[in-house]
Image 1 (cartoon, one colour):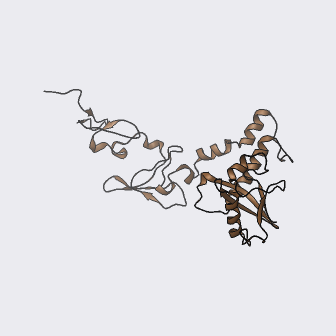
Image 2 (image 1 turned 90 degrees about the horizontal axis):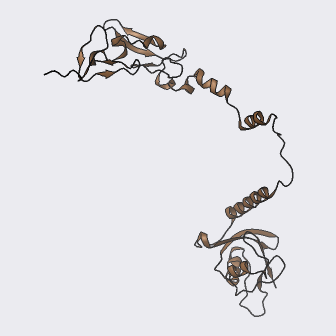
Image 3 (image 1 turned 120 degrees about the vertical axis):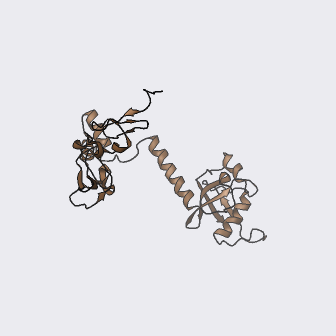
Length: 252
């Protein structure tokens, strides 16, 4: 019983053998038997279009190695390594376009424009290289505020056990120093005073009747009661204290 649709004849003219598992050549895309599946075995028509530098084994009539196209490279490969852009043979080290200065890559680099050049081409004039001085609107102000907040967060000291979601960052002014710190918004002002005394090495005798007391003041020099939580202070219009703002520590 014959199977006329099964397999394919080898495309090599000197063979024409019927092969049930033909192999497609990745260069000319024709089907060949296993004996002629490699490009040089069937004198592939595409070999002439590729700049191979091949060293042949005269005894077997097959290529011994494929030399890299770059004149200053001695690399050789046992199988063809061809650049799809310039269609030249290279070693594995120089196979990628940018590794052998492929003309296609150079053309892309030459034709590419920077974003500023593209805008200039569209609007018909070159963009000013000078940066505007002073304020540039609400967006600039917001960006500046974000930068200040980020720097404060990076430098702030505080109890590591305080969850990030509970942290309130402020600049603490003590004498002539400004110390970035964070506290839990659940802490009372009294608790914050104790933490500040420890962190800033302040003499804390708030429990002693006749000794000077450490107190926290807002931006309007108003004393903040020690029994209030920080969250209550922040939400109250009676005190000039905001997140990423300032508090002042003094003895009274």
